[in-house]
Image (cartoon, rainbow over all chains, first blue to last red; front, side, top):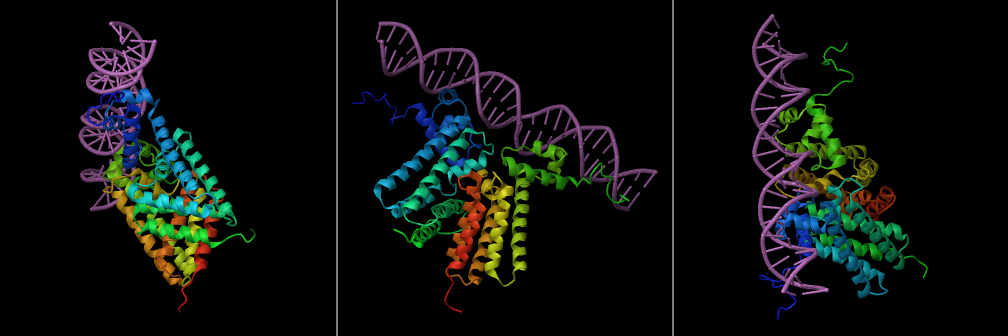
Length: 201
Length: 201
DNA sequence: CTCGCACGATACCGATCGGTATCGTGCGGG
DNA sequence: CCCGCACGATACCGATCGGTATCGTGCGAG
């Protein structure tokens, strides 16, 4: 037993790169990108700055990699609702909304990583910006396709409306100005998706 | 001529405190709070760090004061649409939406100051956080009152929906995933405000 | 006229930032 | 068996951070 596992001191310790990404995830999400130093990440990952710079060229590259993972998780959730409700675009849209609504309590007082990162990284040349913009663009494309498939007329407009509601709900959750955000958000998305349908076929 | 004006070198120079707040406004909005140092603010305000700390206890206090001004501007706009359309809550809501839609191109690639500041200031004890939360809470209260006055049923829910759309539109404008954001936003708000009305009265 | 004080300039403080260099050590693959 | 290399630890780098202290100067109010 414990043959291949490199003698974990107490619990199985992941390889340094994973630990670094996990630590970065937690710290970036809870305290923000700019307020978290590389040293702090190293300590939480139970490693050192040197090790971090062995795996990532710069801090910016680490930030970009973190967001790439978050984006991949979102896309995976999108895929999952697709396979769970094949051929049922309405349920897929609601599933996506549900996924975000369920995440609201977890994000708690800190909001959506993409929205926050955009605020923290004003310069468009930052590597993480490209990750965010590509993710958002892809998300929009998929949502438009779903709206079209659902027979909603003006799919771009409906997709925009849904996007506004999802993003706005996350922001409102963060600043605490509205109660029962997830519940309200789901109600709105349901009403949008059930509202209008194109007459033809 | 030029009797009371303290001999302006070229153009009328505002008093230091105003120049500092103007400089902070521009820099915070375009580059973010954390990325802008006090020294940079002093240079753009054509003064020095010492002068800044003569007028503001800390940088955090300056940030809070800046947001207080921005919030006051928003409230003033809210008041203005109220006086422009007295007794016409529907037009007041649309006027508020129009105010935000018109501001979208100005905010350009940087988004709403409140949303961005929330992302940059995670700790709830920060003085600026209270300014933001009070502003948002007041904004929500006024919007709920307007929705009720407009005869819309479930005013809290409708106000929440409008809030989500307004906030989400600003975020989407920032990340560029959706085109014609202002136009789409106005269309949505109009449809919300014209949708349901309470049967009574 | 003169005094006080806000002002602008400058230098400085300790802390922390992102990033690099240099060690010794211990595990895994040839 | 043994060698290479990733690892962890530590010290260090220049730059910049928020904030303070100390000047001289010049304008406005008494």
